[in-house]
Length: 218
Ligand SMILES: NC(=O)c1ccc[n+]([C@@H]2O[C@H](COP(=O)([O-])OP(=O)(O)OC[C@H]3O[C@@H](n4cnc5c(N)ncnc54)[C@H](OP(=O)(O)O)[C@@H]3O)[C@@H](O)[C@H]2O)c1
Image (cartoon, rainbow, N blue to C red):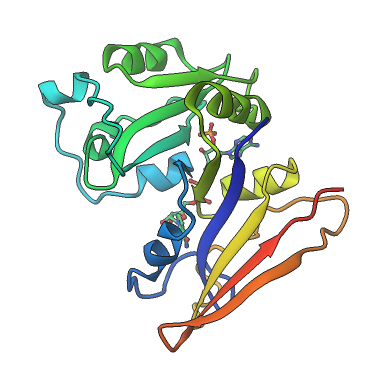
């Protein structure tokens, strides 16, 4: 079994992943999904903070797991072992802790980095992360029933291609950004057209549209 996967992204009317004003609407709608965990792309986490203060002793201590703690667990595939900024987000306002998804090819020194700091990690796949396997572990070992994505498209396009996305939530921002900014579905490579079923369409904050589709499974 795997958790329900909800892809949640804000785009401009012309499909760009950046360039619109951050009004907080993304998180207002995200919170409505009641997800147990959030799946971030590693590039998204890498670019998420402007400054990365050095680690302190706290970076090596696993935060206590309190049942009443409503913050999310952040799950991040990082098979190349690129992230060294996890301490900035761990045990912060929105993040309880991390679970890192790695593969058999992940550099050993990165696995050491994770172990020294008591991060949970799952090894799934030989080269890239095998999400189907990793999601099974999230379901069985971590009791994850709903996971929401936070990605600029690279990660979510892979998940769509692999048939792992159940629902797509798009917030359309009232602007056109233009061709210098990446588009959400720029790397979506699928053989056959995917038919979607609209399950929600709502105007939000006067000027935005929230769209919800499910990807029907055969
Ligand atoms: N508009 C929005 O709602 C929104 C939301 C989030 C982020 N963003 C923006 O999006 C940008 C970053 O997004 P992005 O699309 O560049 O990257 P991303 O969403 O962070 O995706 C990168 C992730 O995809 C994984 N991946 C890529 N190819 C894969 C494959 N073949 N198999 C398995 N995993 C694969 C990578 O895993 P490995 O590390 O293991 O290779 C990595 O974790 C930033 O500018 C951020 O601000 C926008």
